[in-house]
Amino acid sequence: MSWFTEDRREGRRPRICVDMDDTMADTMAEHIARYNAEHGLSVTKADLHGKWLWDHVPREHQPDLVRIMCAEDFFEDLEVLPDAPEVLLRLQEHYDIFIATAAMEVPSSFASKFRWLKRHFPFLPYRNFVFCGDKSILRAEYLIDDMPRYLKTFEGQGILFSAPHNALVTGWPRVENWLEVEQYLLPGGVPRALAQGG
Image 1 (cartoon, rainbow, N blue to C red):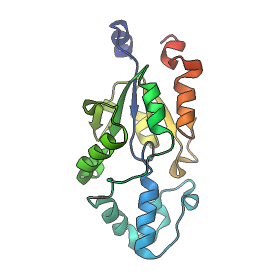
Image 2 (image 1 turned 30 degrees about the vertical axis):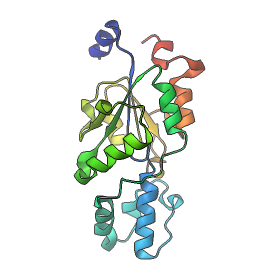
Image 3 (image 1 turned 135 degrees about the horizontal axis):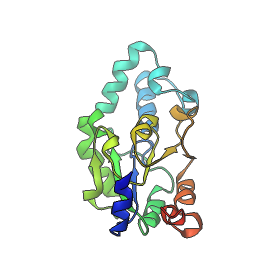
Image 4 (image 1 turned 90 degrees about the horizontal axis):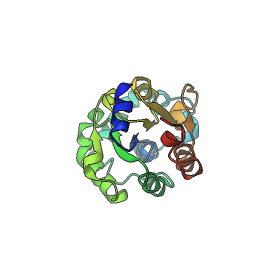
């Protein structure tokens, strides 16, 4: 990873890329709530331990899950996961923060995701919002994501943000919440990349 060393010699601050869905935003809760309301059911996150919502619902409901997520207002009012704004604001004092969301999976989400980020994280510069498909293109020291498939192809250090669907996954440092993210990346108030000398 020579680019890490070269960039750091030039004085660049360490970078953190952060996923949006189910890392900053409680996307799963919104998906479950809309699905339950539409079908009169009571699916909970606890029902999804180690699996996706898609794996839990009847096959005939699969198209409904897609339609629900593709609704223009789906990403507009997602709940912010606890402590995410406060921790990212503190991390921003030591790291350059980039939001990397795989928006290509739901192209209709671009505008609403942008508005959501500006509303809840106004301190993050919009030029640091990366709407992408393949996250292997990202150049950063860290990627915080709930999706193992993105961590597998990331060249830096992946950090797995806990979610029901990844409960059985191993292979990366795992954080349960944003306070644990802060403890991992700012141990003793020192940026981890500097504390480790790299």
